Length: 438
Image (tube, rainbow, N blue to C red):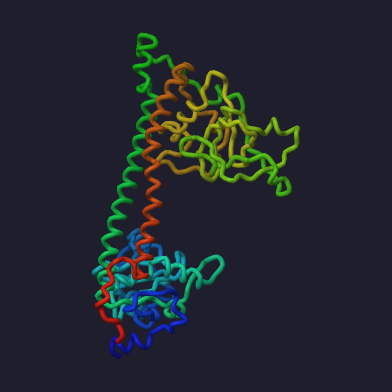
C-alpha cells in the first residue's frame, strides 16, 4: 500500500477532529500511519548479564534511563522478541505504571523490551515528530481520559491506535521536530543549572552549619566581646536542657470541625524551620485539654514518622496543636529554640538522628532517643549571635531558592511549546507545503 493510500485509509472524519489545524495538515488515526509492536506476556527470567532489558521503569518522559539495568539471555531474546525487533529511533510508549511516558530508543545494539511498553514506528512520517506529538498536552490528556483501571491506570494498544493525531506535511514534521528539539534542549540545560545550584546550596548549607557548631562562625564575635576567641562551651545532652516533650494527640473523626483549632502537620513546615499553614485540619478540643495540647512560642516540632526529622519552630500568635506524627519540645530559658533547630539540622545533628547522607533512615524516631543526644551549649548571648549569622545566611540563600521556582515555569513553558507545535502555532508552518494527501 502506498503512503497516500495509507493516509487516506487513516483519515479522521471532520466531526471527530478534536481541534482546528492549518489547512495543509490532516487528521489521521495513530494506528493508521504507524507500526505498533505490543510486547505482551510474561517477561523472560532476568540474568546478571546478556542483552539489556528495557522495562517501563526505564522509560521516562523524553528520556531513557539505564537504571535499574536488567538483562535477559540470548536464547530468551530470540523467543521473546518474535513480535518484532526495535530499532534506534523507534518511539517507546508505556501503556501503564507509569502511563503515557514517551521517549525514543537510542541503543544501537540489541535490546529487549519488557511488557507494558509499545514500540511505535512511523510508516509515513518523522519518528521524532511522533515522539513529541505523543508528549504534547493535547494527546496526553486524551490518553488519560481513555485510560482504564482503578489502582493502576492503563490503555490498550487497540484503543491507542484509534487516537486522532494532527498530521502536517513531512517537511513541516521535520521542522517541528528540529525546533522543539532545540527549544527543549535549552529548557533542559536551564533545569540542569537549577539542579546544580540546588546541590551547591545544600553543600554550602551543610558546610556553614558544621562551622557554626565548631565555633568558627562566632570566633571574631568572641574576640570582640571577651577579648579572646576561646570557647567556653558546655557539653551536655538535649534531655538536660529540655523542660518538656509531648507527642501530638490523635483525634477521632467526630472531633474534626471547620470551626476547631488548627493542627500543625509536617506539610506546614518549611525547610527554613518556619510554619506556614496550608489548609490544616481543625479539631474541637475540650477546654480542660487545650493548655495541655496547645503550642507556645518557642516550641520545637519534630516529625517522628514519615518525613522523619522535618522540624520547625512555632513562633505564631494563634492557637494551634501538633498533629499525631509530631513531637513537641520545650527548653529551659538558657536555650534559644532556633539555635536548637540549627543544631539538629547540622551534619552532626542529622547524623545523630540517623538522617545523615550515609545512614539508613530510621522507620521512626522518639523523644527519648532525641533527649539522649549530646548537645553543645554556648552562652545564651553566643547562641543568639549564631542564630543571627545563620538566619542572615538563610535569608540570602532564600533569594536564590526563590529563583528555583523557575523550574515550574520551565515545565509550563515546555508544555506550551508542545501545545503550540501541534496546533500549528510554532511559527514553522509553510503554507506552500502541499497536504500529505492531495
